[in-house]
Length: 219
Ligand SMILES: O=C(CO)[C@@H](O)[C@H](O)COP(=O)(O)O
Image 1 (cartoon, rainbow, N blue to C red):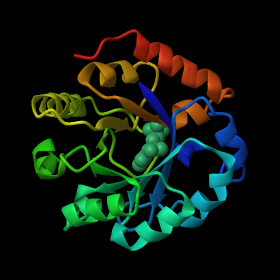
Image 2 (image 1 turned 135 degrees about the vertical axis):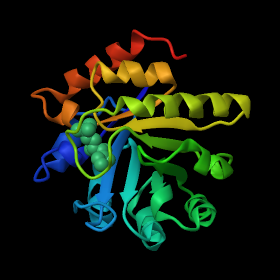
Image 3 (image 1 turned 90 degrees about the horizontal axis):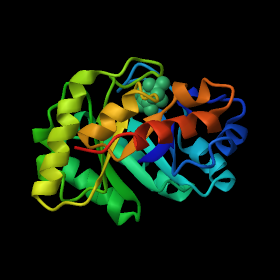
Image 4 (image 1 turned 60 degrees about the vertical axis):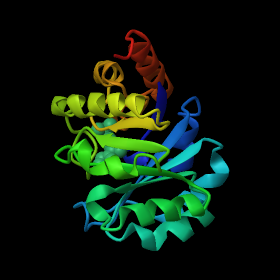
C-alpha cells in the first residue's frame, strides 16, 4: 500500500523539516481548506509552492474548498502532482476533472462518508484516484468510520468488473489497525495525519503502517 502522510497534523512552523521526516512515503498529502466547504482554514497554493523544492514526492492536494476550479491553474504552477476535488463541491464534476488532467496533473474525485459510490460512477473512467473519506472532512484526529468499508469494497469490485485503473485512497482515522481494514476492503493508498505526525518518530509510524498493511491480503 502507498502511504500519504497528511501535513495537517505536522508542525505548521516547520513544515519543510517535517516532510523530510516522512521521506520514505510515496505521497505528501496536503489538505487545502477554505473555511466554507469545511469549517476549518489551512493553507493554500503558496504553501504548496514553498514546499515543492523540499520534496520529490507526489504532492497529493485534497481540495476542501468551494469552487475548486478557481485554483487549479495556480496549483499546477505551484507544483501539485495530483489534485482531489469533492463530488459535493463540484456541480460540473466531469468538466472540473477534465480541467485537472488538461493541466497535466492527476485527477482525483473525493466523496464524503455519507455520499454513495454510485454518484461518481459516471466519472470513474476519467480519474487517476478516488478518495473515500473515512471521516467527515475538516479536522485531523477523528475516529475511522467503519461504515465506509462497504463503500471501499464496492468501489474495488466496480473497478475490477469494469477493467478500470485508478488508486483507491482512504483518509481519516488511519492507524496501524485501521489500515488493515481499509486494505482488506480494497484501498491502495492510505492517508495518515495524527498517527504519523503526532508521534516522536514519524518515520517509525510509517514503518508500522507498512507492517500492518503487509499482514493482510486485499479481498
Ligand atoms: O482530510 C483530512 C481531514 O479532513 C485528513 O487528511 C486528515 O489530515 C486526516 O487526519 P487523521 O485522521 O489521520 O488524524
